[in-house]
Image (cartoon, rainbow, N blue to C red; front, side, top):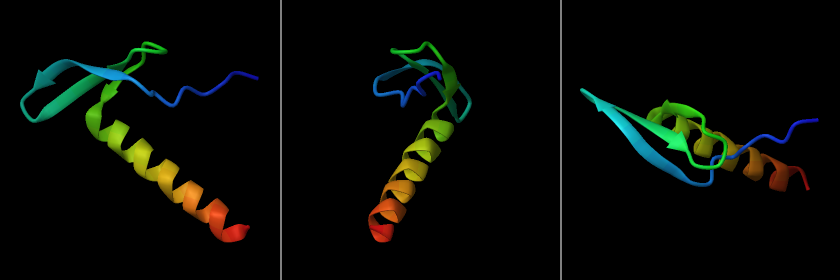
Length: 54
């Protein structure tokens, strides 16, 4: 089973109007910085839910 990259290190590769694109320095994936922020929020919610179930 493939390990999912959590994108621990990213760099800005492009800016277009009010959109910023970042590249993960670990896996090379390029995505909108808004997506990166959404991923961090989802991870924190999942962690909180796991703690609540314990």
